Every structure is written in structure tokens, then in C-alpha cells.
Amino acid sequence: MMRQADANRDGAVTRAEFDTALAQHFARLDTDGDGAISQAERQAAREAMRARMAERRSQRAR
Picture 1 (spheres, rainbow, N blue to C red):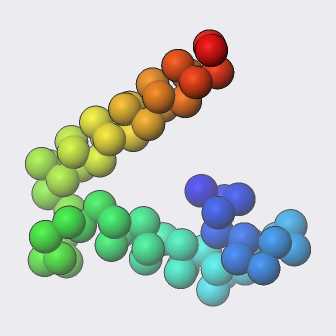
Picture 2 (cartoon, one colour):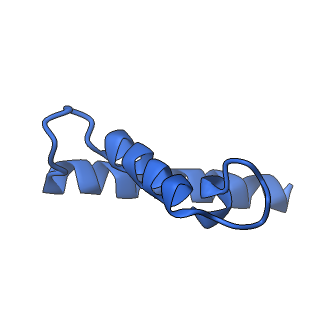
Picture 3 (tube, helix red, strand yellow):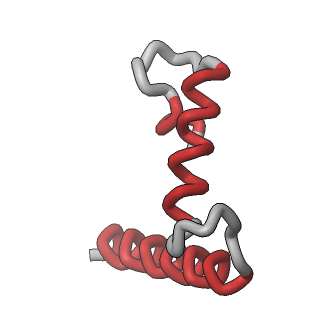
């Protein structure tokens, strides 16, 4: 996440860059837009992350 937060790619993450990245991450997880991340939303995000990781592992194994 820190690498992605470094918007200007200067090797440092400012508070503004960090806050922006955190807000974007929260918005991705809050799929229903109600301002809260429910247990179901957390579980869905966790499953999606595991699927992405498995896909990356399978691509490296090829």
C-alpha cells in the first residue's frame, strides 16, 4: 500500500498522499457506500485478495 500511496513517485509518502490512499482503500471496501465497512464487505475483500494472490502465484508457476 505504501508504494501505491506515493503518488508522485519521489520515494516518500506525505501525510496527504497517505490520507488519499487510505480514503481510496476505504471507498473500495465500502461497496455499498454507507460509510462503514461491514463484516460481509471485509470478507468479500479478503476473498478477492486471496483470489488475486492465487492468480499471481499461478502465473509465476507457468
